[in-house]
Length: 166
Image (cartoon, rainbow, N blue to C red; front, side, top):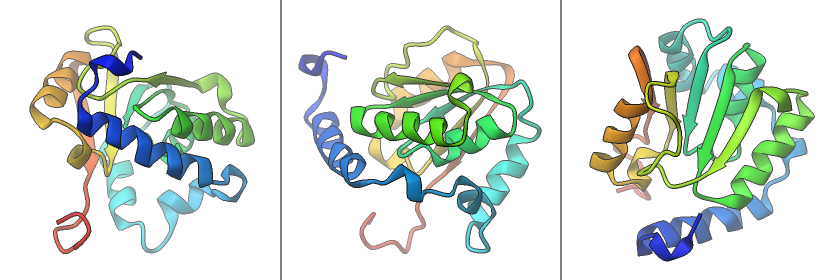
């Protein structure tokens, strides 16, 4: 990815998320808790909305550390992981190896506004806490482009009372 063509906001996102990725310990991440914890109501709902993931092609847009990506692979999905942060993608690869699903997880370093994937390729697109980081108009067009006819996109976004997000 050429950093020359990125916006100031995208460069700032890379810097912030690379620092986070550098400090993360993949060995400490439990992907099952991420989706099944009592406090994970939003992720349990997302899982219900996504449905059976067996043999589905899913794009995890703005994957972060990869908890959802790896969980989806454990459910039988073929997961393409897209993030603007190379350090976050390193975490995804480590987490996929930890859970023995590296063959089901493919990482792509790219901004969400320009998804370098084939048109009508994915059955599902998922995003957890990502839309507030991107240009919604451009990203929405890309999501629509890469989804198969009848495909589904499910996003979880921060709650309105989160003062940091506001």
